[in-house]
Image (tube, rainbow, N blue to C red; front, side, top):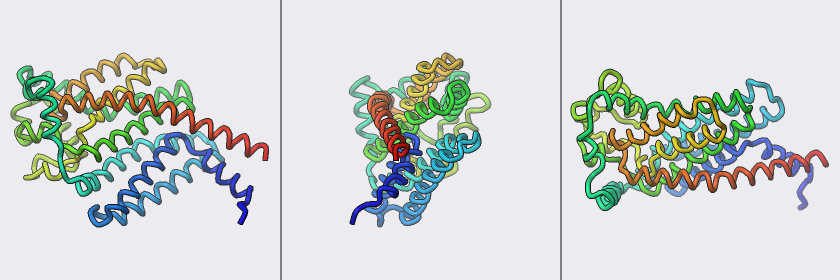
Amino acid sequence: MQSNPYHAMIKRNQLAALTPADFVSILFLLFLIVLDIIFFQRVPYAGYLIAINLILIVSIFFLAQRTDKTPTQLNIAIHRWYYYPFILFVFKEIYLMIHPIHSVDYDAILIAIDRWMFGVDPSVWISQFANPVLTEILQIAYFSYYLLFIILGIELYKRYGFQEFDRGAFLIVYGFYLSYVGYFLLPAVGPRFTLHDFYAINTELPGLWLTPYIREIINAGESISFSMPNAIQYVQRDVFPSGHTQLTLIIVYLSHHYRIRSRWVITVIALLLIISTVYLRYHYVIDLIGGFIFFLLTLWSGHRIQAGWIELQQRWRSESKIA
């Protein structure tokens, strides 16, 4: 049975409407669906997750099509800014999947690598420099990670329009997905649980005013709290690579590449943020090294994937006009 050229053209137009970030988001959702099917008996609510992911894929196609056909400012804004809550949702989805699929934590290996490199546990060694003022500054810097994407995105969108916004957003979205794959491959909980007493951090590493509240917000994002008796059992396995390092470096790279006005402020915050990951006991140093390697991998492969997808889009649109 021969395919209908008209139907083929419609499918190409639907695909051509997807941004590069849409494309990798759909691929990652399909990857999660495959994992849910393979480990259906292990993953809680696997059937619901599969259904939700299919709905999300359809929603991405719908948003892309609506924006392509009716490119109003509102449609464009919704289509581009859905990435932020979407990434957070996927982060919580993999929380339900990682430990049931890969129940072994690899902290012992990460600790051994740090000790081999430095002869000490870096998060323990750096504690000698702790003081409440420094802790407050670094805890705020660590939390600012969640705001840097918005700062960068707003300035990119205002100065360059949605085309350059799409290029930057793709590297960030794609970078998140690569880090999530790392969490599946090498799950770990971090030094605040293995080398330190998680419940004593407010006593051992006190801040000034905001630190305890920020810690509670971050803990809530990882499905734990200081009131839980066995938080280590429930915390997100998101240590290697350090997504904070990887994505922060991507933000710094993009801010300088596009020479945005706040690039030097972002750079200073980024430096404090990366230091804070070890000082505040969230990460081993090898996680930061892993984050740097994943940053390079994101740029190297991301530019190629993005260029290839844009080339396909242009070809499909040209063929559509000829037809």
